[in-house]
Length: 293
Ligand SMILES: *[C@@H]1O[C@H](CO)[C@@H](O)[C@H](O)[C@H]1NC(C)=O
Ligand SMILES: *[C@@H]1O[C@H](CO)[C@@H](O)[C@H](O)[C@H]1NC(C)=O
Ligand SMILES: *[C@@H]1O[C@H](CO)[C@@H](O)[C@H](O)[C@H]1NC(C)=O
Ligand SMILES: *[C@@H]1O[C@H](CO)[C@@H](O)[C@H](O)[C@H]1NC(C)=O
Image (cartoon, rainbow, N blue to C red; front, side, top):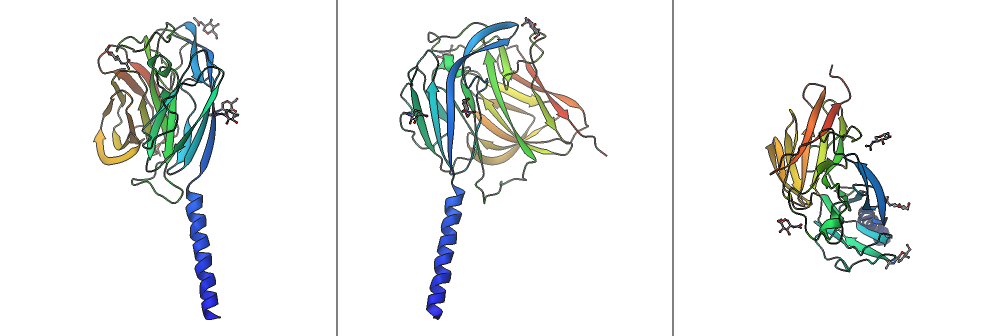
């Protein structure tokens, strides 16, 4: 009797553990449609290759250890493949081009990756517009190894060309872009009144996990927020030793995760992004929503 009961307790313990293990790894399915879309920036309109009509493309948001299937339907006019920056394991078929009119499913099995990764078209001409964030939160039963942020914000630094990029643009020389963008917004510095400015809204004393991705092909970018400093907590899909800085310098394809504490005088502050060698500066705005008491 006693051992039967013990056996039952042991068995239900095992089942419970099993459910715990199973519930910590999820499987996600994403559908990406590669398509041409019209965009107007710098007062001129052109067609660009996008995923689902957005620039930057859709964000993937999962937890550590999850498995992600991304079914890419190529409705564009050119063969394209996607690269998964920062994913450690190998991905079947990741070198194959997806021909127009066909689709291909990437299976991404995450292991220890944590923080921020990103995806982009492999070829330079398409990567300028086909890219997006790949956010990996801690597993369900896992905490951040730093104070838990109030919320998080993805910032993708990109570039914009007035001219259409084609397959002939196998490389993109530094300084060729007509503008730099923050989450697709060129901001007010390029002299076109129709251009939009990126805005990040914060609450006073909120703590924000800001994920900065340098998606600018071939250029080192400098990122800063006036009157604010950052605590670097992660890089390229891994936690790092914490360090403090007033500005971030990101190599091409680099990702840095920082904590930003909204603890200065309530107001609005310029967010700036510029190529490390170059004259353009792109602005965004950090805006405080509540007043301090
Ligand atoms: C892309 O668009 C398709 C069709 O509208 C939609 O079903 C799919 O969920 C979208 N994918 C993402 C990642 O938003
Ligand atoms: C600016 O936007 C207005 C209103 O949407 C539009 O009528 C105008 O053509 C745009 N100008 C340019 C140069 O894109
Ligand atoms: C193409 O998409 C269809 C429908 O979404 C799916 O059933 C099929 O498995 C996909 N093919 C590949 C090679 O991913
Ligand atoms: C980056 O620019 C250099 C110098 O112009 C060029 O040689 C290289 O191919 C470019 N790389 C890419 C990925 O465009």
